[in-house]
Length: 427
Image 1 (spheres, one colour):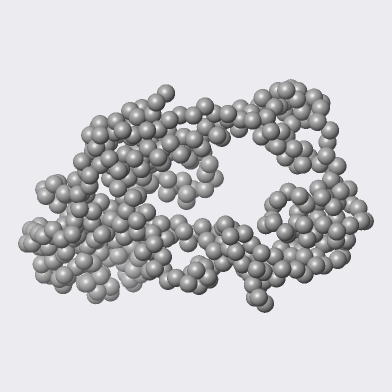
Image 2 (spheres, rainbow, N blue to C red; image 1 turned 90 degrees about the vertical axis):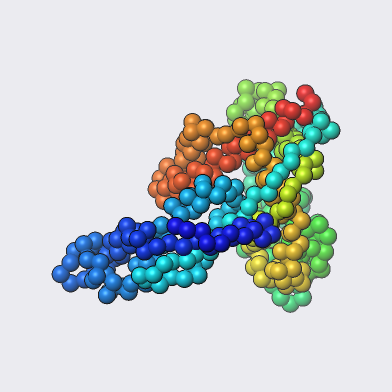
């Protein structure tokens, strides 16, 4: 292997690499053997077809392409070691010359990890507040539990607050039905604030079999961009109506939900709420801590490819989120009057912040010699595998080298964040 050209452009290292046929000889034999397992050639068993026959059947170029791809990991490992390249993500490989029997020339591009100058974290301010849960919050949970255990009795009267209404509904923008904006035999507790303001109020007063068509305005802060602040034409039909009879709150009732008595139930609920509040506070602290830590550092030239990679990841996450809410991503883009390219530009600054955060965590891990050891990775692997005991395909993916590397990175990053917290958060 010979590097015939090396240049650095905008944080990317471009190498032109030449490989001789002799270097590829073992991989050519491997590629031919691999291809012979798939070919059905009369007179030969799969996996035992001679090289020359494979060349005639599949074409010599296919063998060479397979061989080069197989040899690439060794090439990249040697380049990284010899050239001492600290790179980000996966190198890009483009063949410049690939012809059977001749020298192979490849262009391999690495995104270079920029230098990170870790700043002074003494000025970072993260205060830990006492976790407080009010009695009213506990009472609300108890009411929610009562609601889940309510007795339901069919009634023939107009719908009233706290009833369970079984409805059909359809929401339209103009005359066009909104995707995901309809329901059949939908159970709705009136007064639960489950739907947007005005929806449940429209059901109150309806009798079984009655319908109502009305205009419903969605809140300005609604999750769906398609419906945010929009006036819709909504139709509701009441199919069934049930009166909900809530259980009386007593010590005996508390026993039915797993507590010794009412006081014990309230204490258990308060402990759970404290844990939830504490977890939320911890997440908020981490975000604030990382924002301030990044601001205190200096970064070398960050390659465009690093930010573009993060933008693509964010776009994928966002598209999945939109579609999980019953919207087509293309329709969402139409509703906000933007193209994918324009949306990607909107994500640029946030993507850059994410990249800087990753670079900081990486730099601190090296500086403080923080690693994820084999025992930690195995423990996390066993924990995840516990959720997929009967799915061999997912289990195989979890055990793959790529996912194991990902788990190691996650564990290492969390250890770095813990280190940062210990340095700056006041107890």
